[in-house]
Image (cartoon, rainbow, N blue to C red; front, side, top):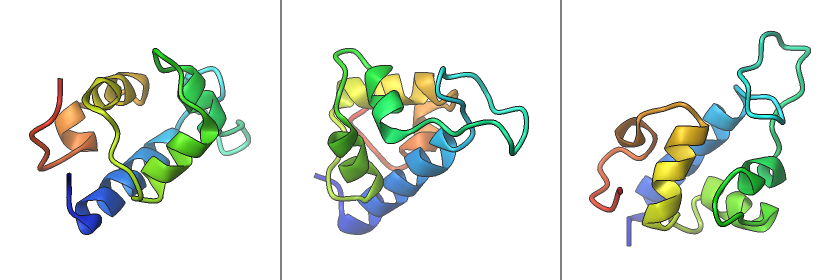
Length: 91
């Protein structure tokens, strides 16, 4: 299990990257474009997770499982080592 500080940093990374995408997973072109919600992000994962799970990740309360770390990086178009720095449990 990662430290509380590390979990909070990962959560902030997920939250800030999610804000760069629209609900369908495409990059936002302008500030007027809608932001992907936690529920929408969860639906893009396989198997899908609920909004509450994504909320716990973003709040730094829970570490994503390894399978989800790789998927989150893919969906959020960021290298897994950038999204989850200092982790040993990536796919």
